[in-house]
Structure formats: structure tokens, C-alpha cells
Image (cartoon, rainbow, N blue to C red):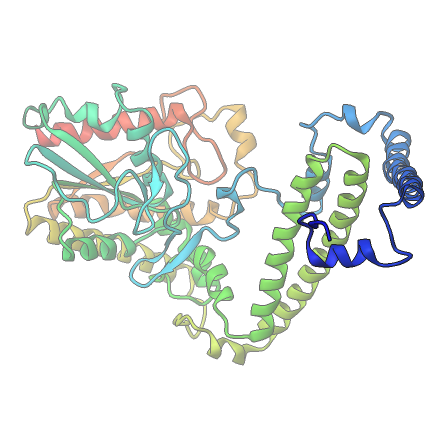
Length: 467
């Protein structure tokens, strides 16, 4: 016998089997016809799958899908109207950006918000800053300034980075102090939105205990100390505890109710899938892709809405059952009753003043200068005339009564604090002569113009004391 071609044995069985010779001309011709018919039918199926959705899109939208503007994001806008927020980047996908912190109450989730041109990030301890903590001096020429307080203090600290080199920054102002003229001034932010005394006191003592060096401390407060505690009091939570409006959402998530935990997980998972499908929908190049993905988006949206409704019912039922609070993983003391208005505000101011005095005592023992700044706020009447733009902002605020009742009490304590040796900078009237808008919201924050005026005033005040 002649030598066989090197085909696998199972193929030779087929080739040499009687009646199954696929390599004959007749079978080859039949195979081509079958393939032709298959190809034609497959093409027709594809034409139908693409043509029907294409025609539907043309009728409903008045244009071909291939000419669709990729920047329109119709699905995204529609979902946002239903309450499903679609984040623009991965950082914004984080539904809950804050985390419990056993000593400070709450902080930002470490690692987020790091994509910016300035190098700012949420560091290892949850503070938005340039450095991880504790920060160690690289040489004796470095001069470390710690910034404490709430969100206004965060803006103050970050302004030193964002507007680095501007003549109005704290660093540039302090360069006029002979002893600091040639120093490398380092700004460390220990502030966070909603922080109020005694959080500043506790955070300072913690970082001192682990070896963090400081050469100067600036604590910017006043507003949070009187605007946020009334909300604690209404919830029968001691005013000395962290801001109830900030920490309550976290404590709700920490409840041990298994159905609630599972419902939250399901809703979160569905939302993630929904976000992915919306992004796919926006990038569809074919009508068939658009039709299929649209159906998936609609299905997931209904699933998400049903899940949210179920979760709300579970949480409402949980709130009705007071005994469920005993199962919470977070220990939060409760007042037996809501405090009277006068008693509550007296306690707020006593807590603020005592905390400041304790900070001063701790830092004095270490020869570290301490400055306390009482921030200006739009709800404390001064000689300022607000712009029409500002007046439109100051509506629907929960902070009005707290500031109007609390600030006069705070200011009455300024002289006592100063007599005890504390460098108190009363900045409540710093905007009185400015005719342009300086506030940017209905809370307490300043626009770039306001930030510039506020920062320059603090820099000059601190600089004068240090000369």
C-alpha cells in the first residue's frame, strides 16, 4: 500500500468509509450550496436585527442612530430625573465617601479624590491633604502648621495649595515674620466637614500622642459649634457628640438588621449594573446594540426602583421599632429628653470655650503657638450689605436659628478667652466693607473673593502676633 497522508486517524475513518466520502465533487457542490443558503439566511437575520431597531430609532428620534451625538447622554439625563445619580468618574461612584473613625467620629475614605493637578488626596487617616500622617520633618528648616476645624477650615488649608504663591495666602503672609522668612512652611490639614468641638481637641491630642510635630496651630471654628448641635439636640443626642446629620447615615448602615443589610447590598449591586449598562448604551454604534441595551437599562431601572421602595419600607419599619436601636453596632448615648433652648445653647458655648482652653493648655506646655479664629457667617448680623446674588442663596437653611442665637453667646466669651492667654481672632466682620459677593452657598462657605479676604485677614493677624 502507498503511504498515507499525515491526517489524524479519525479523519481517515471518515474519508475511507463507504458512502461518506465528503471529498467527492458531488458532496463538495452540495456543501457549497448549503453554505450559500446559510450565508444568505444569516445575512437576512442580521439585516432584520439591525433594520427593525434602526427604523424604530429613525421614527422616534427623527435621525439615524449612526449620526447620533455621543455627547447627548439621553439615558443618563432620564435616569437622573428619576433620582438615579450617574457619576462622571470612578471617584464619584463611591456612594458613601465617609467612614467611621474610632477616635475622630468619621473621616473620608482614604484614597479617594486623588485625581487632581495639585497633588491633594485623602490620606491614610482620612484627611484631604498633600501628606500622609504623621508627617515627619525632613530637616530643621521645615515649619509645620496644623489647620483644625470644619469645612471652612478645609477650604482654608487647601487654598494654600491651590493658590500657592498668591500674596494673600497664609504662607506668603507669614513670610513677613523675620523668624519665618527663610523657613519652608508646611500646611497639614486636620479639618473635615461637620467637625465641631471637642473633635478638634481630641484629634490634636491623638496626633500629638503618636509623635506628630507642630510649630503652629490654627483652629477655625464657631459656626459648626452652634449651627450643628441643635440638630443633635432635636434627635436627643448629646451636643458633645459628632454632628448628628453627618454621622446618622453611617449609624443607620451599621444596624444589625439582616434584611436591611441585604436590601442595601441588592440595591447597590443593581445600581452598579445600571450604571454600566447606561455607559454601554451611550457607546452603542449599532441600532441592534442600542435596542438590546435599552431593554436591559429599562429592566434594571425597574429592578432598582423596586429595590429602593423595599429598602425604604424596611427602614421605616425599623424606625418604628425602638427596640431595634439596641441592636446597633454603634454606641450612641441618648438624652432622656430634648434640652430647653437656653440650656442647650449655654452647653454649646461652654463646650466650645472649654475645648479651646484645653487646646491652649496642651500647646502652651509644648511652646506651640495657638490661634483660634471665629469665622464670619451670613446669618450673624453685622454691618455687611449682601448682594442680590447672595440673598438668593440664603434660603431654606437649617442653620439660621443656631447662628443667630449662638454667635452672640460665643462673642461674649471672646474677652474671657483672650484674658486666659488665647489668641482669639474675631473675623466675623471681615467682609463688612466688601461690596462684591463673598458667600457661595446657604451654609457658610466663601467664594474665591471671600476666601482671599478671609485668608489675608488671618495671615496678617497671625503674622502680627508672631513678629
